[in-house]
Length: 212
Image (cartoon, rainbow, N blue to C red; front, side):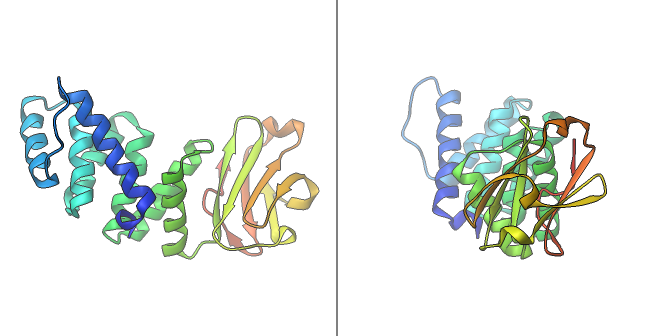
């Protein structure tokens, strides 16, 4: 369960602390989560468009195991495309075993953002890979690099890139590889590519299907 992951739970608590400090004129002792949720829901009635309050409600509900935690994140994501809320929405899908939605939304998240160097994000990604039995995930950086993280060890010779319909072994590119992490430097003309799909043998990994 994602909320039982120590790294991710610390991440959620840190978000609440930041929100609480932003909303309070003075720093007060943090109340029990049930009380804090009641306070936030009351404040939201007074300030219905305050995104900090909305996010706080979602995070608190997620920590408390309340299924309606998804509603605040869905609302903010629809309005702003907030990367944080999209991450939290995927976490909520996982928490309540909505794995198909979690997979779809995580795939969309990877397609729209470059590498996210955040331990909580990696914990989330590992969980998505586990529940969907995927070998790993990939992200793309603006410098023409593909970054891979694998849930289980893989062989470099089993990794292939399908670039605009043409299959290339990963070993044909400049790589940095250590069995569970891989960086592939695309050639200088990568800006001419339209789409990239990544396969480990016949399996497509998460984040594959990049549209450049």
